[in-house]
Length: 420
Image (cartoon, rainbow, N blue to C red; front, side):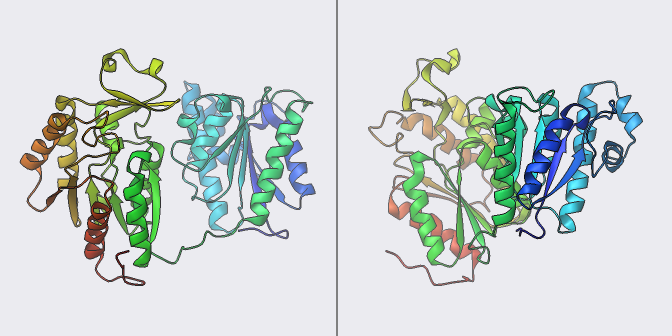
């Protein structure tokens, strides 16, 4: 991705307030043999800021406006959105020209928000780091489902670089320099990718299916059904980076429908991208029977008193009711029916997760049946529903799902799958 002769790292900063910090990290990068490329995403209200390779007026024009117009916007929200869009266009142009090997953004709340808009459409694998005061809190609104790293600045990035911010900024610059100079393409990129969704409660099924797909010459890519990962998968499918989807664990659909839980998708529309693209997809009901919350004290009052499992000290699984699963089933059927390509739904009748098996703490066959009834009533005849007298983690269930997907794919690019 980079070398000592050509590696370039963009520095995004509001130079009217973060000029000393931008100059400091630029010099640190130079000492490592990396070319800094400073992009001013501020409003240019001060004349004391550091010089920029791309002035804030140029960033505003890249957003289709002028800096004076941005300054006159009625709200800070609109200013941030415009400068973020402009910075995104500037970075995209530089990347297309082959001269961008990483991005280091500096800011408080406003700077981090601008950077988040600017970085969200850059490709996976390009190094991206935001040094900000807000990194100690909930950064999901900033990083979404993209591979953006954040580093807490400890002290505010204001005034001169000091004994607190100096080491933090230096570490950030060294990290970006190392990534820009040493980055290499990930292995396995020549094999068609197949997305596979998993949670800890369905991991055995995922592992078995991924081995089967790998044996057939595909590159399985696991996505932890944790809200951000599922959204990331949908984006990658939409971008054409995925040949097929084995959605063993569409758990996030339950949280999207209910609007509750810590795994609500970053972007709405779980179980839609593969259908729009028309690529093969095999879907199961893995981990649809519960919502994930944090520690028990964080569970909303409406869900307390139900069967639940403390999955780990920071994660509690709470059982859904029959009525709630019926609501999930309605959306489930609607989205599978809308698929333009081949799709099949596999139902493991002996449990959808390790906790949902007969005798397990979240087992409730009656509630599960409510979802099944909705699916049977509403699924299109072109979406086969295959019920298997197995648990989701039984090897035979994983084999059946993987084999069905391979059959949809038709020609196999590598060795034939073999049953262990």
